[in-house]
Length: 304
Image (cartoon, rainbow, N blue to C red; front, side):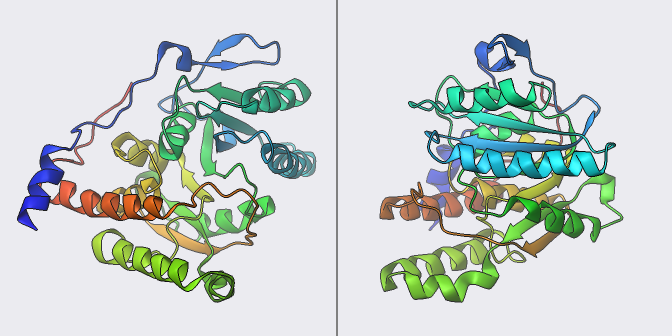
């Protein structure tokens, strides 16, 4: 085990990759022209930012955006003080994801729907981070492009966030959760997949995050301050990023609520191969070891 710890320490990139390519400092407006993105360090000017990481999602993105924007527009009609933005982060897609998303910018305007194309694929965590760092919201919602979670359940995670008041330093996180659906999902999975799932849950619990049953649901609501703090320290940009995000939050004593949400399995899930699970297992082990050995540290610092 000590050799693994040494390897984890030596191979660690000490500082999170917070650099933006020059082209990533802009979003595309309705005229397909570049406009400078705002910064997470600016004061918020919207109630809610919705960050949608998208990699080759031309097929599934429209139904997700239709549902989200129908809900958000209706909510704004009922409460004119409510303001929002949706940020679609195209994570280096090879398909028409950006073009599909830009149709919504043309329909709703670039104040409400912004498309942020990344120069190359970073991974879901990296894509979410770029969206978060370009957000204007007091609260920031991560939501998957497949629309697996019913979008109106944002109200449930908002209640979860409110239940954590008073927020220390204005920081709090509410995680959508599918833990209540686990028994149903086991019935539809092979024994091998079920075993992998339990193995993953155990590793998350044993190595990183004790209090949260479902770390991987892509529906999470963070206060602006919590998003800024946690994503500034995030190292893992691929599948296990949720676990490191919550691990960082726990280290900073940011309160976390877990809230049951409606969730449906959507065709075309990206996380299929067994090696992804093995990769995640390795990432979980390395999260723990790299923080333990001091290769990764949580000293507060400002990012540009």
